[in-house]
Image 1 (cartoon, rainbow, N blue to C red):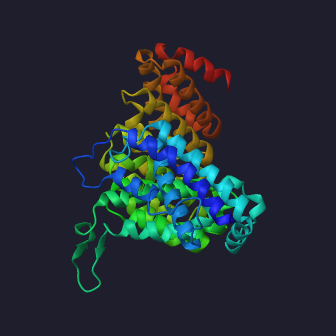
Image 2 (spheres, helix red, strand yellow):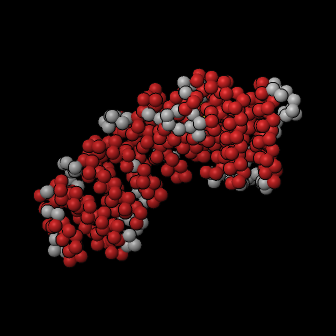
Image 3 (cartoon, helix red, strand yellow):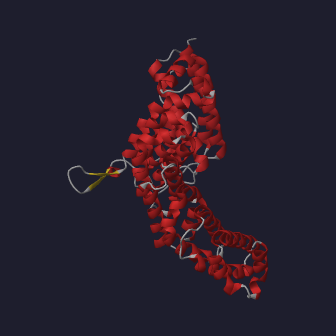
Length: 435
């Protein structure tokens, strides 16, 4: 039996349990779409393939491998999705697909190792440093990313070159296909990590940018997850060729829908701090901070948005350092408002970020010291009625102690009005010990 036939036979063996499980899984297409995911998977997994015992043309084998890999990517990606197109896929089928792909990769390298090594070498990677289970993923990226990019673009909204009107390609292609392609793309990207992913930026970034340009939040979200993975696994030099277009895409997407706000905040913070690591006065830092603050100022009572922003923003604060002083007039009105929110998580996060602001800037010249001291004193008393009162009071003491250390007489003057408050006696005692 030829090596191609042996690999083909193994591919058929790996398909069978997935097709059997897929056939037994109940599926009702969502009413909101005319895209049948089950039919798409059946098409990718079945195809017209000859008997596994017979010889198979080389191109047909590689087409079958590519289609099988795309099916596995779609099934595996469903584990992290609640989208209606993928929610019907049971976890055991998703895991079965993941394991089958790993098995195929091992079989592929075992049979066609030289081809695989050359393909990976052509991408600038050292094959021996990549695990056997990931080698097929890397080889397939140049094949599948252009396909997925085109599938995503089919339902995008494009600006006409000849006028000011927009044309919706979605009239020709249901958006569901773009959603599936975005999930497949994200799965492929997240299979590769540092230090290998950096060599693949030229393949990954164009397709990732296409997802961010799409109008669908679900498509955008998968692109944002991909960029976040990229930011965590690629160094700033490897992103350098694309820095302006990437950061512009971040700015353009900050005013996104609630469902993907957490993705855009994490992505934007990680990318700008990575790409502009040595330039806190960069215009990109300025634009991203202003976009985020403007968005929060317009919705100061949106709990989910502020909690997400407070949770992810610290690397941005660290990256700005002393430049944060230029943003104090916008940070503090929000922080003071949120400091007294009914939600304990919000309050604790605000106190942590305020501590970071003071630690990074050592306060310098700011008119907010007296107001901050007054608000912290009020919060310390309010904490008596909260579940997280001990944690809140510890955080308040930490900030006041920091203010005491760095502002000296200005702090003492601000605190003087609170020294005789019976509800703050314990706090005054702690502060007097630290003098």
